[in-house]
Image 1 (cartoon, rainbow, N blue to C red):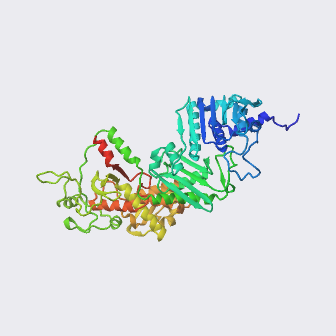
Image 2 (tube, rainbow, N blue to C red):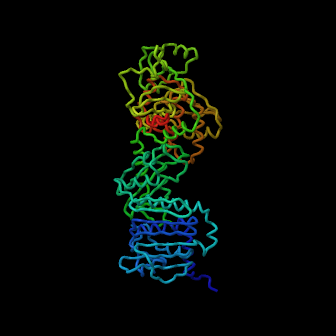
Length: 619
């Protein structure tokens, strides 16, 4: 009995189907890609039972002759590949999809080429091929797949529920439609709601198609990405950092028109947002990479979802650099969805109680009372006023202050702070400060609405950006503590911190060991003012425990700087004077990325006047 024997053609096709045909969505992907490669401008997909019962894909492409149809269902027969496997300019190229589908399902293909007097149809049932026969079809190709995996019942048991399979089909169609806005896609069936994506005809068909699929909310909160380096072109749109999601399902990446889920590209996308987004949130983006076919190998995965670049470092650097530059150019811009969510909360929640407006401590002034002289926001944040005893705070507020409503015979509805009449800051992007609520939220008036600012989150971002700038230029200035601050910590945490002491010093934090279970803090970053050094060191030790021990802290300096900035920013509960609030707003306008804090949360919410008027029934 021979040990080695040749497998039958049917068995070979079934093995190949195990790699190519994973689930109904895999069939839809292969058939729609064939339609696009055939030059179709309209693709219609119909499914039933999540695709397990029925998949029908019709297109208006070039079609096939009788002889081509007979060859198309044989393995390794294709019209898309010549002799160079690296010169792939189509979505499909292996020539095994139809043979694999026919081996595990009932497959019928009807097609008409312009040179034929009528259409032809061929049927394959579980690997059994029937000869071509005349069919009725005016043009293009219609492929119908029924009873998927009927010849391999074990594979059928591994399918998920009808809804899950239908959702996977929808995702595949969306990605292909996104990559080819010049094609109309229609998806219908008894197992789903109908989808129709008409051909995009605008000045930018790609962004028009993104609006069709992702909604206008993404378009309104996206920034354009354009970059090119050494023949590799990157284009597309990426959501603002504050327009994020709880998972990575809204990340769409394309290489030469091919949807991919490549780890290198996903990692680069994540790195581009690392400076402005919390680790448990995910950006929304649709990015296209175009390069010469010889610069990328798409023949590394049966489903063609992974690719290998000839110069992966160049591609990664291009993506990370382009994203960071675009986010920087977006300045203080924040997602518009925050205002919608705020209005929705007003409409569905209980009527909010009116918080009392309070005057704030004169910490940004070189004097006090009416003759106080305002100082710069930078000087104030570098030298924040120390906490005052209660009696001192009471004395500070004893001076006459502009009340919420003027004490005159005719009450005034003007609740603005005491700003000179000749200075009108409401035409600035973040408006003019009018009040501080709950000692944390700044209310500013703009020409067409109002802005609510989280003072702690905003200042945290400003301090962080200053630290990064100082680090890039000449290092962070330090302030020597008169008496070193000794912090007791677990021995493991002490070891982690001391191991990176030299690198902490680059950020202005100088520490040294103080026995087996303590750390002495001798210098802190001058930019941060007074610090809760214990809380800071505990957070840094936790971060070091999470990172791989081989990762140099220098690669994580931005994250360390963000942690320090959080501990050194204006705390919630700090009372601010009107001039301090305005200075904070102006600094935000001048600082890129100030629309979100270091954790990716918005620093402000903008409400349009028209929305507010609708809230009160005025429109």
